[in-house]
Image (cartoon, rainbow, N blue to C red; front, side, top):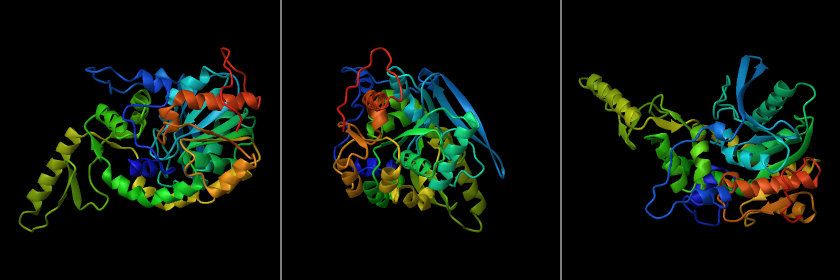
Amino acid sequence: MSALEKSMHLGRLPSRPPVPGGGGSQSGAKMRMGPGRKRDFSPVSWSQYFESMEDVEVENETGKDTFRVYKSGSEGPVLLLLHGGGHSALSWAVFTAAIISRVQCRIVALDLRGHGETKVKNSEDLSAETMAKDVGNVVEAMYGDLPPPIMLIGHSMGGAIAVHTASSNLVPSLLGLCMIDVVEGTAMDALNSMQNFLRGRPKTFKSLENAIEWSVKSGQIRNLESARVSMVGQVKQCEGITSPEGSKSIVEGIIEEEEEDEEGSESVNKRKKEDDMETKKDHPYTWRIELAKTEKYWDGWFRGLSNLFLSCPIPKLLLLAGVDRLDKDLTIGQMQGKFQMQVLPQCGHAVHEDAPDKVAEAVATFLIRHRFAESIGGFQCVFPGC
């Protein structure tokens, strides 16, 4: 399990075992069923949590790129939400409903390039520089020269991109910055086992329900409510089940070497195609993004991240599932009061999915304390200052 959390999400080395189907949130608790009752792993639409969806067009040298965003709210600062590697904007669905009920704010959850429903010319360029520019370009396309006050909130890889965006001054109206469960030191350590994890996880799923069930039972997402809406953004219908080398076919999870014999090559190739078709029929869903192919960018996401975060001259918040891996630079910065920190125990790495209510309370408290937003329905700041 530790390999899963630290590798899949590229940001933290967990110290606790998973609680399958559980969660540290009220939302997660609601999904737990009594003995003898089967849990519902069916997918749930984004429209249950967001008010609207938009495809934002961004002009570039080679044409137009289209970025998918999900939105809620009509007043207050914009919370621009950036997801982790392999995830999508839908990972913020349950959090969105929670934060909108606590403070006056607007939500813009963005599918980063190569992820979700975003369509770009070069989806394989996941460098920190390119993705940070994407964020700035989407803000400009949506709001023009007079953007509203914006707070960047990012989880894992998205947290790193939020910091790179802020440090490069790509969002002129930026008022705050929040990183969720990403620390440079532990992220760099976790990269070593990323490929092992990717090779070990399922390559295909029989259905969306099967994918959702795996995400919960493996501990990737401990909150079933969130998994039911967010896993839709992680997987897609298969286009073809072949390995990158092209010389192997994956059938029922077994890799079979293609036989090359002059007399039987035609029949072997025919069998292979039939096997591939059977696999697609039996396991029609696979991952939207091949994270293994992005390895050359991993170092650039996280190296130097702590100092970049500390150097951003705006109010900052760091939310962690545990303090066991806080690196030296952040430890010193926290002691010097350079940012606020909140630890949310009993969560996996996907803190905002596992405990959306607690993350919403922490963010709402931060916004109110800095007078960035007004409370709704008598919401009271619940976390002590850090």
